[in-house]
Length: 242
Image (cartoon, rainbow, N blue to C red):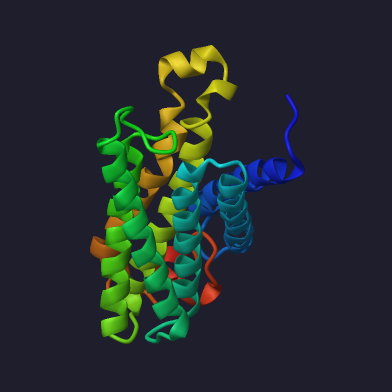
């Protein structure tokens, strides 16, 4: 079976982004390794997502396009959050318009799949579309709140960065271990062990969000952190010791 160069680049970027993401998650926050892994994660994920959307249209697999577009949006807005504090600009309004469009598309595709005689739309059942729609809705609420406040800082800023990057990592991991499970040995598929690396990003996200929001070590100390591709300016002294 032959693969096009763009598809191979898409797969390589997704794999590299996933590996870099896991390195960033488990590295000491603010360390050189953490920052480097985060930079690799951002570049790799943006390349993977952009190629994914392009290939979805070229290969007429339009059901793959919304997931790629939403991943691109999450990584960009997560990176933007890490670079700024208490400020917004025109890019934030553009990002809001993009995710509003994605919300409309995914919701429409989900409804069409649910009412289709085959129970699918572009090869996918309603579930994946509605999942992306819910994710887009959460992102929209966060964008509106940030724009209404003319920016966020501290724990809110760190939490926004965390969940967006971790969800992007989850999409990359699930795309490899769940959507492409056929490339793995049968014993791994039968035991269900592939679910663990797929959902590990969400478990890490929950851990860090709880720690950031409720641990005493973080109260009034969050000035910077770089989980998954941020700049050192987002690293708190407490988080750097984790």
